[in-house]
Length: 244
Image 1 (cartoon, rainbow, N blue to C red):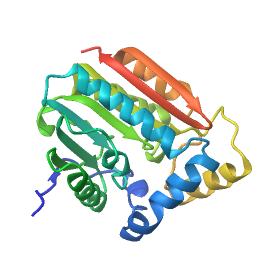
Image 2: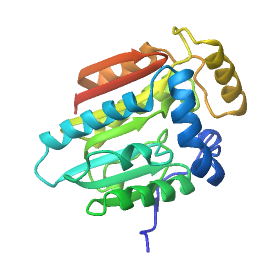
Image 3: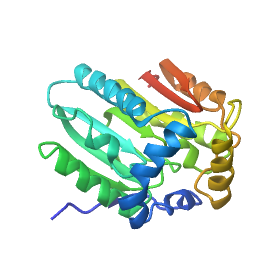
């Protein structure tokens, strides 16, 4: 029997984006449609590029931590596809945090099956609400948020405030990594413009005002080292050495 998910906070309008991940979407649509079609052809960044970015930063976090003590927090778990293929053999624990309980259950099952020697815990919570490290069992060596920020309700300053708070969940050599689809100051193709309009209209995205500065400035306020690049219309970012 899988461990029960710990509920921390379940509030606010963040639920609009989370609600789109129904059982049908998770099982039959997300990986093929979003990762296989939307990411490369609308957002200009393939799953292979995203996975390579994710894996490289996780591998670095593992190398900087003590053997078999590395803790990873994955926020906005989706279907668990990034964790499934990641190099987690030397990770002691993977903690999953999401507002959608069904996503948590599905991603946890996928992670445990792929990495049976790695502990996997789940937290049912809204990341836009303050969460202490104590409630998550301590600080982490890596925090990932892949393809998440564009799903969170705006304004961008609200998301930036959340990014600053994440420094309090990291160890001194920890890394925060993520990716998000930008809505502003990038050139979307016709396919991307249609998707952007549609997904924002139904509440799955709230990213029309999201640009690079919306996220990089808050990260620079909270971390000693910040690196980023844009692939297509997708921002990939990493922040290291939190200013604790």
